[in-house]
Length: 171
Image (cartoon, one colour):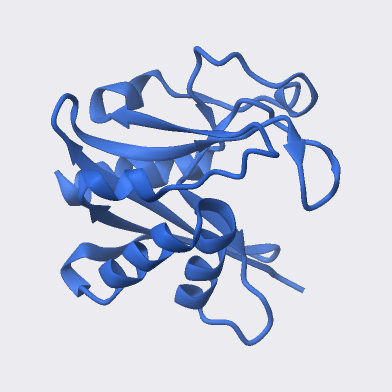
């Protein structure tokens, strides 16, 4: 059975850095599995999750946004989802094992105040500019257990691609 996932990269225009992408930084604890998180300290796109049977991609994005970043931020994302020009498919990767669709949207800077990261995980939010993209390192197998330093921006290859595409589409 093919694993189906969907992701969202949120961008915003900030007063000090201009256009930035909103990334999640993986914490120390995976609360769903009640275990140590893999790839601790790695950055990932704003929201990412598995599509449940019978669920549409947009339903998954909203569910995952609620779970990962809170109800208030999910309402903001839902409003953007209803504005076609502000919500775009960035890429779709399909093979015999997985189907991943990544979307992008742009929100007002004030919307970031509504983000509620689950404090039990130790995760956080990181804002990166287009110029930061060239410094992103791909995750290595040893990062799975060792984690990455907080001064590095380290991501899965498909997430890096989604971030690049988001900056291209919204710049």
